[in-house]
Amino acid sequence: MVALEFEVVPDKALRNDIIELILGMPINQALAALQNVSRFIRNIELVYSDTEPFEKDITVTLKSDGIRLLFDAKSQVLKLIEVFDFKNITLHYCGTVFSKPGQEANVDIVEKCFGATHPGVFDEQLKMYMLSWRGVSFCFPTKDSSTVQPSYAHGLGSLHFANSALPFLQKMTIFSGNTPAEMKIPEIPTAVHCGNNHLISIDTVLEGDQIVGLCFVFMVEDQPQSLSRKSSELPMKRLERIIRFGDSQQSVHTALGAPSKIYYKSDEKMLIQRGSNSENLKDEDKPDFFFNYFTMGVDILFDCITRKVLKFVLHTNIPGHYDFGIYHRCNFSVKAGREPIEITTESKLEDFRSIFMSEDGDTLAKPVILNKNSSNGGENPFGATFCYGTDQVIVEVMTNSHIASLILYKNDIE
Image (cartoon, rainbow, N blue to C red):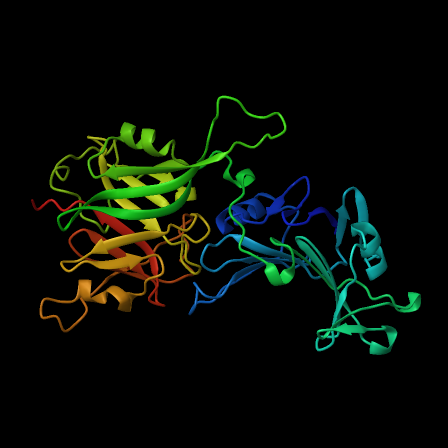
């Protein structure tokens, strides 16, 4: 197996000619990038918490290459890059190779490459020597404490090693911040936007107790009249747009820009019933169609005849769902029910179950069971989900009671 070679960019990325793993990139974008280079990077493991998906980070491990990617549980952006096995990987910094198979880095090589501007520290409990610079840290095991000469300061010490006992690199971490202790969750960098919208939040637009549309708040690349030659990156700006039921395809395109994809329904197996205004309009050659905004976590359904907005689908991109990895997480706040209850991306069924109670108010209405099949006709390995509906809202719920998606449609009773 040919060893992959990566450039180490502290505080930013691990990259080469075929892939860039950039701090702040959303998990769906990282997974797509890894799929595109499956000829070179294989044996990938994804680990997540089924019971606490918004509390415990998601990890993607490139097992053959010794790289681990940690994604923040809530924002789902890449917050940490770890290299834990240096036997099958070559690393360089500013044009200098400091570790490669058969010649793995030791503490002296790392100090010479990155510059020994300050002493390292020794964690006596972990028996680990640590060197760090802004955005990058290195850990070296010290099996025998007699090989070091600690000068203690608040439990940590500056160390000096005998040349015959130089420890080899055990772990390298790329993070955002000055030190590992000050690590922060990175924002989505401009380089990752690639001309796409990135959602900040979605809220319902109400008229009385009826949902009439959604308010989108998102970031886009700005196009100033003049751009400095020193910077090739476009500045970002914040926009707020309202899309209502009945808005035209053109008005949505103008407000949100071109969708990532346009998907035409191949059948009418939708759980949400068509509105009365379009129910009698049958035309197999002109199916209803979606605008898919993957980087916003949103689908918008248009009527095939009127080309006006029928429904919104908001995706949480929760691990363990059939659609996981396709959408960026949609951060929404939806008010639903006769006595409005707020439903958010992180809500669980018990938080809003009162909306879906039976008429006697004692039992939860029976859900519709949804079991998606894969595109090649195979079984869905993730199992069924459960759809609970009310006047304008259908919530798709996982077996762990978390929301997979939320569907909004117009109430035709006026």
